[in-house]
Each structure stands twice: as C-alpha cells, then as structure tokens.
Amino acid sequence: MRMTLALFLLVVGAPLFGQDGRPAAPPLPEAKDQLVPGLTLHLDGGGVQDVRSVRLAALYVPDGTPASPFLPPGPFKATWEGFISVDLGTDCTFSAAGNGAVVVTVADKPALNAKGDDLSKVEGPSLRLRKGRNKLVVAYESPAKGDAFLRLSWASSDFQREPVPPLALSHNVNAAPVRTRRRLREGRELVASRRCLKCHTTDAKGMPELDLDAPSLAEAGARLKPDWIASWILDPRTLRPEATMPKLPGIQPQDAADMAAYLATLGKPEADPAVGADDAKLGGHLFAEMRCIGCHTLPDKPPAPDRIPFTFVKAKWTPAALKKFLQAPEKHYAWIEMPNFHLKDEDAGKLAAFLGSRAGKGIAPSGLQGDPVRGKQQVESRGCVSCHAVAGTNAFKTTPLKDLKGS
Image (cartoon, rainbow, N blue to C red; front, side, top):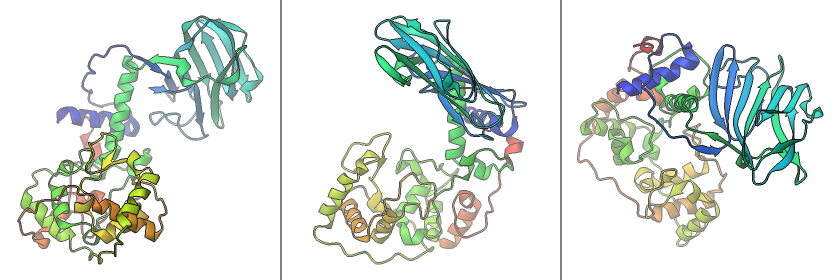
C-alpha cells in the first residue's frame, strides 16, 4: 500500500506540482540491457527533462502545446539516441523534413547539419555505414515560435529517399532513464484510469485524461440486472480481471445487496425484444464480419489478457438494454473504448441475440434482501457519486491531493 501511494504521489506531483517535496519512489529493480526497435528520445524544455522510447526520429508539436506531458509549452530540445543498422555496408545520405535546427551524427561522424524554416533544403554528405549497428544521435532544437516538426530520412544507391524505418533503428529499452520515466508514465496512466483525482480532488489542470468519466448509473435499473450489480459492487475483478474500479473498502455482501437494490430502482427494464428463429445465427455472422473477436473473447473460449470477455454479458444486461448498448455504446459512458458502429436496429437485434445465445456464466443470487433506502445512503457515502453520474448527494470526503503531497 505504501509503494502504491508513493508512486501515486510521484506521478501526480510531476505535472501538477513540480518536483519539490515529492516523496521518493521505490527503487527500480535491476534489468538486463535489451535492444528493441526504435530510439531513446530525450526532451529538455523550461528547465524540465523527460525521456521515453519512440518508434522514429520524428515529431510534431503544435504551437502552444508541450512536447511531453511533463514539459511546459514552449521551445524545447530533443535528442534521439540509439543505433541505425544495415545488412551490408553501404553509402547513405541523410536529410530531414521540418523546421528549427537539427544535427545528425552516425558513428560519431557528421551526417547532417540543417537550420531554418525548411530543413529539407539541406542534404548531408555521403557517409559509409558499416554492416550491423551504427551509433546514431539526432539533436533537434525547435523554432522559437510556431509549430515544431522533424522527420529524419535517408537514401542510398539501393533505395530512394524515405523516412528511416523503425526496424532499422534500435535502442536499449531497459536503460535506467527510460525505465524511470516509463514508470512515471505508467503511474500517470493509472492515476487517470483509476480516477484517483475524482476523490483526491485538486484545482490543478494539465491532464486531459482527468475528464475521463465512468459509466453512468442514472438508468442502471433499466439496463443492468440486480444480481450482477451486487456482484460487481462486491468485487469488480471477480467479473472482469482488468476492471479499473477498486474494491470498496470494508464492503460486505449485505452492503452490495442494498446498493444494488437502490440502483435497481433507477429506471424500469423494457420488455424483451422479439427474437427470430435465425437471429442468433445471423448475429454470429455479423460478429465475425465486424471482427468483434479482435477486442473480445466468447464465453466458451480461453481468456486473453488484451481482450474483454463476454463471459457475463447475459448475466449483466437485460436483452433490450444490450441491443440499445450495441447501437450507442457511448450513451452512458462517453470515454468508452468501444466505437459506435451505427448499427441498424435489425442488425443490433441479431447481434444481441447471438451474444445472448452463448451460455456464459450466471450470477448466483446472494439470497440477501437488499434495502434500497440503506443502499442509497451507501451509494452517497462510499464515493460512487464522485465517479458515476447518479442521483443523490456526494457525502464522501477524503484527503485532497494537496494534503497528500509529501505525506
């Protein structure tokens, strides 16, 4: 728990408060050097530095925006480091599209030196690249004003001018600076995806991801089945291992039953839509044609860590609500990753029929009688209103972010 808190404070301290007073993060474990495609990018601007792995020696930063979430807007310097490789020794020339100033060295030899509003006007000298890896450094300085743009290209007698491809580049992805800043980025993503600042509030700005919403509960009773609601509240990750909603501290089965009973009063389920004899079969064809399997797994298939399972779809949704969800996934959750496929009513019905025809897992009733009055009090006092749109008063209070800093 202490490690998690330290990482949380490390991450939010960087973009929101600066570096003074932040607690030390836990030390990074040792890691062996590992060369992977791409380059290491070092950024420096406004007295702040950042490091990350990138695919290409290329960037575009619009005027008035930062080159990194951890840098302030304004002029900056960028340095790409790593190796450029060729299968056979060959003579190459380097050039760049963009503006500002760029200096390129290959094996510590000058390969390009260009400056101005159009870097493509300058071509570097012919340079011999030896077979295998050659040290590459690309140093770029953005223009004082306006958009900043750079893209490194190369050419030889064997190929025409083209952007240097990622597979020709390599860098040590486990270098200490890269791993340190990668952890910061991962922590930043956790702060956003776990909605930490919905409860640990702050007036600071700078992260668009802080607008990340959560599924609306305003019409939960019209869409979701009570047994699924109770099971989800009790422990979200038993139903979906990658769930970002935390398990509520001290939650008991009766609490979950009470909260589910209250949420079930918010809206009335619609009648089940009519299902044709061939709808499930035709919905299966749609499922295949739409490549749903790229993001999901069916209940009778092994789970995959990067795909959302359909294991509890039938236990979660009322049939009418599932059909409507497929037609407008974003209606109750603006930041949902699932796209709106603009399905026709008939196709949504067939796809819903197919999903409903797969067995999946049911939710065993808890046997507890929920009290909606107590449930409403629980919803208001446990922080649900901080993240979810739902009727009621947010009675949940916890430590503001500014008071966590340095604790």
